[in-house]
Length: 68
Image (cartoon, one colour):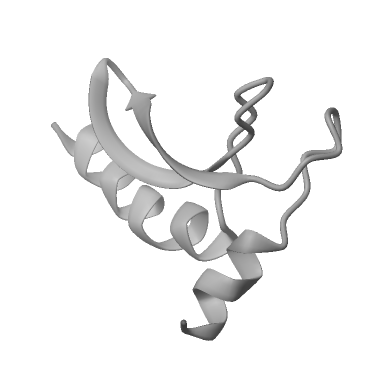
């Protein structure tokens, strides 16, 4: 198991106090949706979006959608 996956396993939901587990979620922006697998709380559904995803891939998608 790589360091990134191990770090995700240790993320605890602030609301429920249980570990987040990988799960499929749908992200939406400007009317476009795309499925991804991210750590989420199995109890309340809270999703953790890692900084590298928010600043990297999601930023790229945001710029591409705004250019259309």
